[in-house]
Every structure is written in structure tokens, then in C-alpha cells.
Length: 101
Image 1 (tube, rainbow, N blue to C red):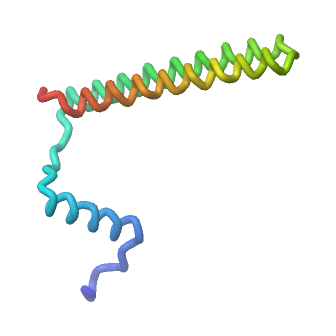
Image 2 (image 1 turned 30 degrees about the vertical axis):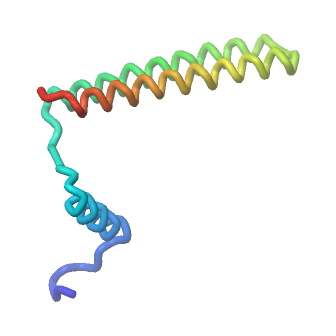
Image 3 (image 1 turned 90 degrees about the horizontal axis):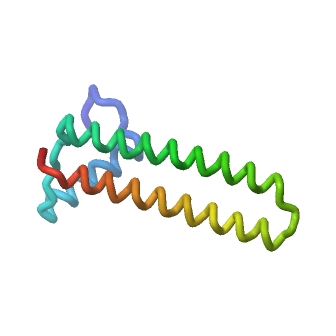
């Protein structure tokens, strides 16, 4: 162990192991371009806004429904919407990462 260096955290050790594994497997590490960063930020911002909107609408609908079957159907619809929005967000982020801008 180096004399001057403080001990590494478990996170730092894990990241070192992952980077080493990536190098051994030939995975290249590329920095994101400003355009890619903007696209990723925009995808996250839009998804967060859509998720917040769905949550507000869902809460509003749930207040007016007392029947368990109807509440369960609304809950299922809400979960599907959330999954779809998150999936779209992740796809857009992955597309932005792969883009060569």
C-alpha cells in the first residue's frame, strides 16, 4: 500500500475491478460529447415530467374510485404507463450514447 494514499472505499475498489475487466474484454471507454449529454439530459427531463404528470393524474383518479376492482385496474394502468415511460427514456438515452455526434 502506498504511504501517502488514503485507503480506498469499496466503491473505488469495485470500479477499478470493473474497469480492468472491461479493458481485458476489449470494451472501449468513450467520453460523451456535449450533444450526447444534452440529449440524455433532455430525455431524462421529459421522462421525469411525464412521470410526474402520470402520478398526479393517477392520484386524482384514485381519489374518486372506491371499488377494489376498479382501483386495481387503475393501479395496473399506472404501472404500465410508468414502465412504458421509463422504457422509452432508457431507449432514448441508449440511442444518444450510441450516436456519433
